[in-house]
Image (cartoon, rainbow, N blue to C red; front, top):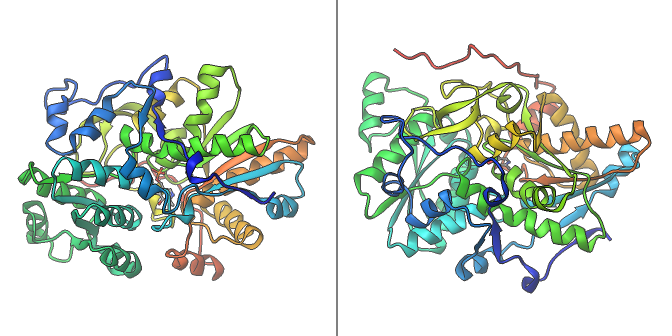
Length: 444
Ligand SMILES: *Cc1c(COP(=O)(O)O)cnc(C)c1O
């Protein structure tokens, strides 16, 4: 059997909230001014109420609304594929499976949370959504979701990316979103920055400031949304692992190790948490491994402490492994993994030794990504190459040890809009980037 699919009627109808099964639950987010736990009322000014409820929920399962399931069915179930050609190329006794989230319309796992976020906002009577995007993957996912629920979406896109990545912008425009290069003249924050530096290239922190300012100005009609890190985004992604649990059962397999690449933690959590449940509640011993870039190693070299979720310092303080919110990662091609911190749930799980983390250099990930493209046929996103490279390491280890292991990884997205990175690799221009802790924003 090459790939395993579920019928529409077999699709999971609930998301899994791992907090219900954690002995040590994550610490609460804090209001930075008072250092007291942030209240739901404070969070409701920025986010839809149902999302705030889910953010602090301790219920084990949360029902997926029928309207959300209906849009999920456009691309779900995503295939579980046995990577036999890759196994053969590696001459390994290991069995390698991957869950292919690249088949979504936006080309990544991100619509799994974009769709419910748009739905809950629309149901509450919100008319306008704002968000920010760096490379454009989150922007395309939320644009796809927003137009399904007739929400008007403004995406503040970091100006350099806006100029360098016209195709992501055009995808957002195609789905009806307005894409604004940030810093812009639409907000006070943007005007202030432009007054000081009219040619400012922008940053994710600046784009977040603009998107939040716009939402706070009209709290009834306008809300802000975020694509990763927060508990509710991880929750929505568990649809990936819930499907994969069923698909692996159909394959007659139990994974020994489950692998996901790691930016803020959402696709890793999505594939891993439903398998971790077997460890937490069923006495299983499945290894779960998060893979980060060596140049942005918050899980393996960061500190566990309260920090801001964004560069500008506008979010509540979150308990996380972090390199510091003013750390600027090297400009690697896996843009979605260039994030200074990790979600609160994943940070707590790592602290408690319930999961593993590994940091990989850029060239190793591209070598593995190329091998994957040439064996399995799918051109992976540079982010997803990190999961592939870790799976390749596991398969080589199995060969050295002469043991057959079952490896499952999440293919978080395809790289068809990232071909510039491939051009650089094929021309021999790609290098390994170091972690440089002193690389932080100058504050004056
Ligand atoms: C955004 C993105 C990531 C990283 O984000 P997570 O929240 O850690 O999953 C990884 N892969 C792809 C394809 C992405 O678009």
